Figure 1 (cartoon, rainbow, N blue to C red):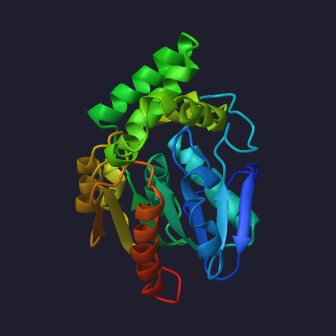
Figure 2 (cartoon, rainbow, N blue to C red; figure 1 turned 90 degrees about the vertical axis):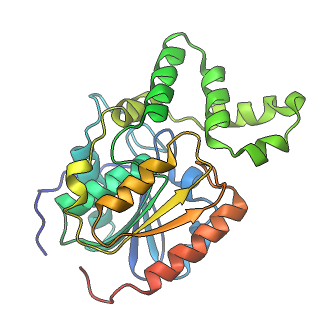
Figure 3 (cartoon, rainbow, N blue to C red; figure 1 turned 30 degrees about the horizontal axis):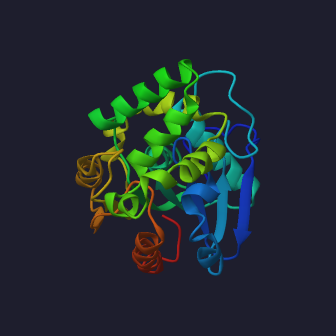
Length: 269
């Protein structure tokens, strides 16, 4: 099998689970494999081999010593899959992971069978840019509790937030704070520089774009633009869903993703 670009040495912390056709998981900025995909890992592992690399500074992966670059991150994820014995795979990307997935598809087209892009963006939209700037300035001031508050406000749906009493917010803030990876600022620095608009027309594999219409961190319009730019892309809306899908919305997501994956050709793209 050939690829357009040589692979680096595989050195990321990687979750590998299940059996069957491979799914390469690309998580979001400030996230993790468990944080983004935890609600569906066990289900998908019944029929697929899951390969979930953690970005530098997330999970057990060492913090980057230089600014992250999208090409390098894409190559690292592919290297992790190949090291796990998977030469071809579908890529499931969430948020920043959607841009990573698109870049993987254009840098390593012979390895990619399909893409599933959730809450994604081809380039940073104004809401996401403002959030990235706020995270950077709050971190510089040491106000990590406020970053956790911003994350809750941005990533939970209004309906889920409405179920919380103001007096009960300290616990979810503390939980969010405890799950923030060391590399969070590096991830959001990359978010602020992402631009895969020129890649979209080069994607030649079946693609499913999932749009949480209640997303308050990434504008839903960004996902619509992803779908519009990728030839033949399918688009599914999750009405009212937030940037981080709750259990009910993730269950709906799983139904759509399983149906999409089941319809893929049995041979690699």
